Image 1 (cartoon, helix red, strand yellow):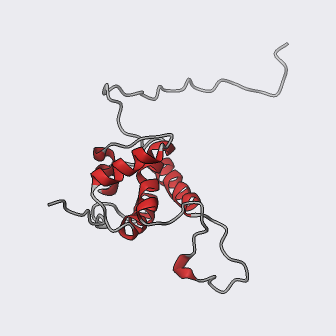
Image 2 (image 1 turned 180 degrees about the vertical axis):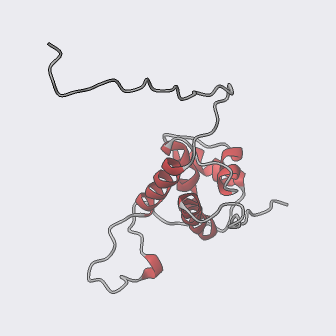
Image 3 (image 1 turned 45 degrees about the vertical axis):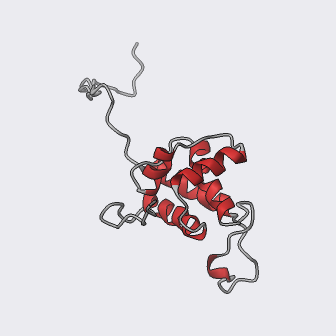
Length: 153
C-alpha cells in the first residue's frame, strides 16, 4: 500500500520561506488527492515539461528535505499536481475564493505564486558546505597606510 505524505511539522521545517513553499506545494498536493509519487512522475513525463523530477526528488521535496535548484525541476514537481487536481496553473489564484475587500481580483496565477515561493525559499537557504570540505579563509587585510588628501608629489 502506498502511503500519502504528510506536511512536515514546524520542528522539521520551521516558519520561513521554505515552509511557505511547502504550504503552496501541499495545497496542490492535497487538491490532487495526495497521489503516489510514481503517478506524479508519470504525469510529469506525459506533460513533456522542460524539466524532470524523479520519484526521489518529489519525495524529498514534499518531505522538506530539499528545495530543487532549478526552476524546471521545481515545476516538474508542481505542474503534475495541478493537472491531477484539475487546476490550470495559469489561472488566477484566489485565496479563500474572495477578493479580501478589494475591488480588483488578484492577478497572481497558481504558477506565479509557486514560482515566487520557490524563488524566495531557494534564495534564502544557507549554502551547503563544499563537497570537498575546503574552506575559504578570510585573510587579514593589510593595515591602512597614510591616505592623506595631498598628492604624492
